[in-house]
Length: 231
Ligand SMILES: Nc1ncnc2c1ncn2[C@@H]1O[C@H](COP(=O)(O)OP(=O)(O)OP(=O)(O)O)[C@@H](O)[C@H]1O
Ligand SMILES: Nc1nc2c(c(=O)[nH]1)N=C(CO)CN2
Ligand SMILES: [Mg+2]
Image 1 (cartoon, rainbow, N blue to C red):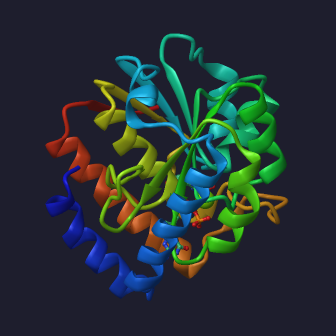
Image 2 (image 1 turned 60 degrees about the vertical axis):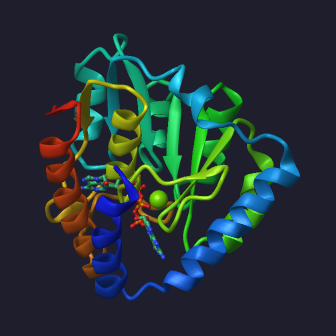
């Protein structure tokens, strides 16, 4: 997704969600500095090399558990949206890539990263403390932002971890993107937040996030080069 296409979505998102563009911009600069300090950052090419023609993107909806037990995912690249990582690990799958704003279960993100997952860490105005604590603990990290891209901090489009993962897959060459556990709706999957013990009724800010995520995925379906399939 080009910046000109993303910008109008982003301006609507900050207005509706009450975010600060300045705080989001500062967060991108902080992530850039953390990446340069740590020397574990990767560039787009390195991730592009592991994205196959088919990519599975795992969201944290309640249907994820059954899908993980029922289907075989060995013919494509596995991309987990944040909390979905925990469900994959429970089912003995290691994501090739994890797309996260660091509010999933950090110990699970670290286990997956130690087992080989590439990390795509998103900077925004509300996760600066988490970035500062956890980015130095990861290896193989690509940085993303929702404001203007910087040299080593990318913006491929998308808002929530799930739809951002689909935009990343498309941008890096996948031509079939299979969305697993993307239920949206009124129930948030239990993997979505570390404090959730059960699938839970959707709360207001999450409902708004789901609405934007759905709209962005519709945009990608119409304008992207990949076929989107909901499993
Ligand atoms: N019913 C659902 N419950 C949870 N996630 C869902 C659901 N349907 C689709 N998803 C997708 O799965 C992704 C899982 O990511 P996760 O909830 O861990 O983080 P997130 O996007 O950072 O959300 P938040 O900012 O609210 O933590 C979501 O971003 C969303 O795109
Ligand atoms: N400022 C800000 N930006 C975000 C946030 C958030 O909570 N605050 N959450 C996101 C993932 O859903 C993506 N972007
Ligand atoms: Mg998250």
